[in-house]
Length: 505
Ligand code: PHE
Image (cartoon, protein in one colour):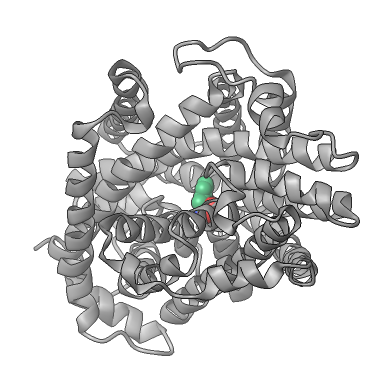
């Protein structure tokens, strides 16, 4: 069975950018920037991009391309014992991150419709938490499904299913060729529009003025490095799978630079729109910028609706904003469904279409808990654990496995053979020592904080059952799948470069 390929190099690039640009670029990036005082966040963010994001993106493209396989196949071709790592990556994203991610997409859809007549009323804060989500008092009080949220979740999964079902070329590549230009145009409209609002400069100044005093706060650095991971879809197994569909002659480093550059450029751009709107709102209400938003999650669903209610032609602005979020989210969701399905096809050789349908159906069922009244609380806990632990651990192990168990210099030679600009030897050491080192420091710091006081003031029981439980369950699933025998002969085929690259050690 021959492996499907992208129709064109630009098709691959757009799909990778589509995966990278997601809710994380608008919702997560701006609230992190906001939380850390705007400009204070940009410097650590850019440093994290250059020292860890870029090098790891090259690594993921390189192993997908050289080993020709989805994450579990690629790792198992490096060393059979590490197959589980690939499964864990695709599992905790597919059955963790994406389950609540589609819930946020559903909120966006609902808010898209609400924008039309400013349906959130005079008090968007009360509306969001009490009227819309009806958040319960604790994660144990599930308290029934919210119909509108569930409906939105169903739309998100259905749209993803239609796209991935049609395959890599006919589905993912085609859809991204429409979605990405659309997203860019809509975002440019938002940026220009928000910059023209009165008071916008106040927000922009806060956003673009660096604040060096913040750099001594480790939290800023931790958030910057984890955001780079999240936003580039690193450690998700996605970029590995996408690169495995590239033809032999493909510019790996060039693609990595473009993907990372476009993705972060997009975040910076979206940040401009977000901060201009905050500036406008502060000006309009005669408040300080720091007083207009109280909660991170409230940025998109409380602060924005408030501002939309104040501006001329607000409903149109609101509709465009929430549509952007939805489209950005959709192009990311399809990438993880593909990464999981591609892994299962590589291993079991079963029908792709059947798998896409089964995985989507399971995903939808799993999302239901995030449509309940406790949904926001569960989302908060699962997001915290998955992005702080699973993602970081996979990142560390990925560097160790490729850097130490595989001939990383042969991988570099492979990259240099096909790419336009060459990787220097320093890259080996970034992967072998620097990146895992930084991630290990982050991990330890996080763990210490975790044990000192319960995250988010939830009960220890809720954190253990939901947070740690989620990690353990996905890990168990990964080990179980990895222990099943291979039904295909892909593993025997090795990689694209010379045979010595396959040596372990
Ligand atoms: N890169 C995405 C973002 O920034 C993260 C993501 C990718 C989430 C794929 C889910 C699936 O939003």
